[in-house]
View 1 (tube, rainbow over the protein chains, first blue to last red):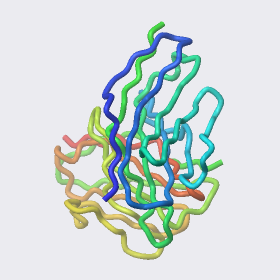
View 2 (view 1 turned 90 degrees about the horizontal axis):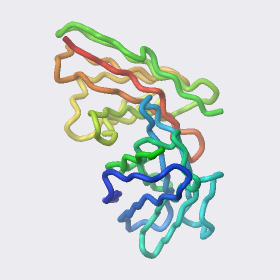
View 3 (view 1 turned 120 degrees about the horizontal axis):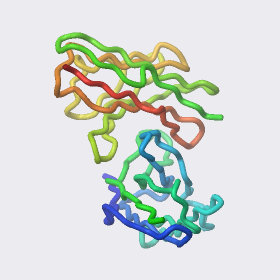
Length: 117
Length: 113
């Protein structure tokens, strides 16, 4: 069974600085998707970034980028120029891309990010 | 694009009554929707997968007779909490898949008195 581990329950970063959130996963599959979701105090889950396992290039979305290390099964999120609005719970997630497999997303336990003004 | 709505956003009900929560995909069709439950400061727990035109698939430990799911159209899934009790109080979130990504509704806070 696939698992997703986020080893940092909480992190803090100074506004305008850069922070990296860690995520590791375990799977025997070769084709899958990885996601980072953000859940601010409103509790609306927002997709931050996604990565397809077959793509070697790391995904980037504005100030958000990932470091995808497939062999190490690591998928960290880097937030550059942190802003107060980035304060939220961040969930790392996995989904199989294999045909006929569940569409289910497997979530990590989350990392709460605090932005210090 | 890929907007998912939920209604109501907040509901309070008496113990023993039933509550229906709606999940709609507003700008796309979703053959599969998902229902999650989230306790305070915890991750999302998948309750069931809702398939249009067929029975839902429930996760282990989720009572299918208590949490009734109906996916009557490609844009609407409903979750009915039957005979609600205070321990059912929680935050319920739905999601729908568009392409390779799941998009989430804003959630429904259920309080059972």
